[in-house]
Image 1: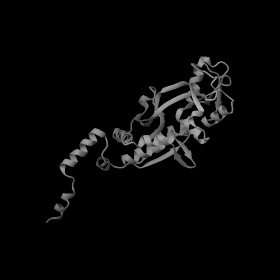
Image 2: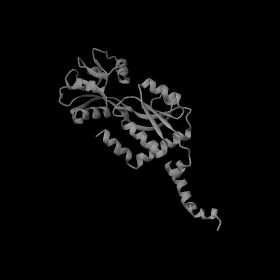
Image 3: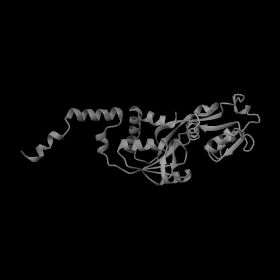
Image 4: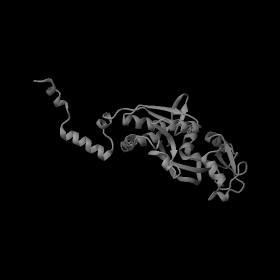
Length: 264
């Protein structure tokens, strides 16, 4: 029998092939479909924002970092990651065709600047007080009186609170990072602190304190989410491939298991 006929039984039966194509259309993910596409190197650029993304020694870590590694592996794409100061991360992402910038807050102003994959996680910026300070109440920013709110210097939240009329050195206690502000709150050097809920849980865990050490006094900004951003001229097929992989990770439970490791 000719050799080329020996190879034919190894081909998947037509019914299975149609099933795979149907699953691709419904779920956006099929291993054989990914295998048929060339593997391109994906470059991820991010900043130091624990627990979403940060450097542990020389190794990028964090929820968004681990999630992107899962997404790239599921999509069959090699991945390299760099944690840089934010402006350098933006510049590097702009210079690379197959780049991913994260963790990005998706806003109307940024909508046309990126092709979006996500969401990664909800972005909930909350104003906390110590649970032991039941005497403190804050229904609105105007009720601060002589109290002070801790905020990371020159952060988006810092700018928002200053735009609302709060003054640095008076109502605003500016710190270098979330960890510094949390320590100040615990030491009684201010009455409130603004934190991403993920960051609150993560930083308390570093201090071996339960999340219940803090209590939400006021929701500051809870309407947005974090996303991965690709260049506006990135290959649309690459964007779809990454989104399909992320959707699969959400469906099969890996997303929830990863989230529990960082925020519980």
